[in-house]
Every structure is written in structure tokens, then in C-alpha cells.
Image (cartoon, rainbow, N blue to C red; front, top):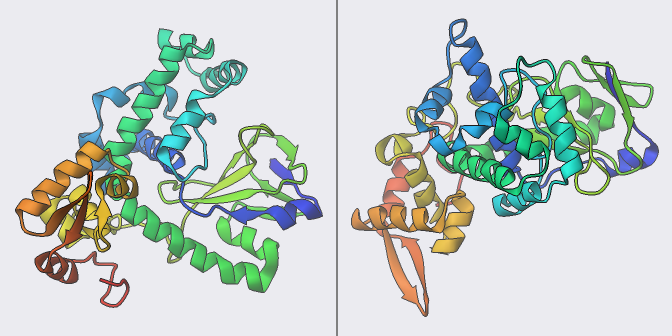
Length: 342
């Protein structure tokens, strides 16, 4: 049994994350991809996972070693930072002692020896750590970023669903709503698993809804310096996992007419330009590189969906009347007229 003990101060300081964490979602998307590989012959693979296999970049292959088909998985990437660059800097700053322990814990129970690059990583090798950073960034850009609008929508919808539960029933009711395996007993939160118990130390627990996670909640034990104690749970914005049943992921081709027409990333770029933005701002919002944002903007500009104006040394992109018309008529199936300002 996994048990987390709370004091009155811990309950007072338990709170939700203010925004989804791109690196946490990246890691969990990789976990789901590995799970799908194991269960491929037994269950129907969800559409976004089939697409992710096609989108998987060669530079992300080190993640196949880090994220085995079964846990434990690396905790040193679990930065709750809402900015990807900040989260990757967090990974770069991982102490060698922490890496050594992580690698030992992760490989326990796996057959054979870890690959050479992981053994180097356990010794704090900077090149190996940068290999991980590049793999995470490229996998994020290829698989997670194109679905980020759906992540944001589901994240905020989940929080809206939890707040009335907390207001009406307190923390005990809230914890009970997160997953059927979570139970509040004797001033502590319990979940089936290996025998493990720890104290929060007065700092509370950070609750992180994850749109990619489908399994039981995951406890992240903080180190008291870089990483705070957290509970990552599967978001359920409408009482069910987004895109994990027979339906598709919000914003995926097949459930999103605009994405089906021009592609998920370009659709996210067009929607981000409901408000005029510069290239750097646009890239940060959609979680792609500035060069990629500029390329997508050119395609949309050539199609007369957006216009670009120079302001000093920078440029500013905005929707054309045609672009606004397209957004008004081609919206995700889950988004009804009036749900969002155009």
C-alpha cells in the first residue's frame, strides 16, 4: 500500500497546478505509447497512438530505453513548469547522485545490462543528459504539441469539474473523485501498490491533471529542493477520459474538421491567432519552434487565412476575414457555437 500522510498544514497547502506541464505530459504520452506496444494484439489501439507511431522522430529513440513497457519510469523529468524550455533546463540540472539512483531503480527487474549511454547518464555525463533533453523536446514537438489545444481544453474542464467537489465535500471528497483506487484514511491518502509511506512535511501536495495518463494516479516524491511532492492523476473533464473510449482525442483528425483539412499543428496555429501574435509568442503558445511557427504562418498566409505585418524588427500575424470565417465553420466536434469567442 502506498500511503501519504497529511498534517493540517499539508491540507491547507494542497492545490492544483495552474497549467498543464508539457514535460509531464510528454513523459506520460511516451508511457502510453509503450503500453500500446505491449497490448497491441489484445486491445484496439486508440487513433492518436497510431498517429504517434507514424510521427515518432528518430531522435527520440533514447526514450524507448528510459520508458520501458513497465515502470518504474524516470522521475527526474517530472517538472511541473508550464514552460517547456524551463522544464528542460530542470532536466539538465539533475544532480549526478539523483541520476545514479534513478537509473538503478529504473533498470531493476529488467533483463541484461542497461545500454552504454544510460550507464554514462548514471554517472552524470552531460552529453548523455543532453541526448535525453533532445529526445524529450523532439518527441514533444512531434506528438504532444500538435494536440496541445486539446490538452488545455481538457485540463481546464477537469479543474472546473473538481472545484465544486472540493467546495461542497472538502479534500476527502476531492481525493475520492480523482480515482477509485484513492482512499482517504486516518489523515492519509492511500493507493494500492508497493509498500511505501512518506510524510509531506508541511508543504502540501501539488495535484496535476494529466490528459495523456490513463492508469491509476502517480505519486511523485519531491526531493525538498528541486521537486515538490505531487500527485498526477488522469483528467476526466466530462466524467470520462478524453479520447480514451470510442471517441477521438479533442483536436484530432476525424474529430476536428479543421485539423482534418489542414493538419493538427496548422489548425492549432490558426486558432492561436484569434488574437494577433508575433512569431515567438505564437510558437510558445502552440509549443513549437519559432522556425516551425514561421513556416506554418507562411502556408496559412498563402491560403489567405492570415495576414502578416511588420512592426519594427518583428512581425505580427492576425486572421483575415476568410480565416475567421473558416474558424467559425470548422470547429472541433466537442466545441459548440458560443463555447469560445471568435
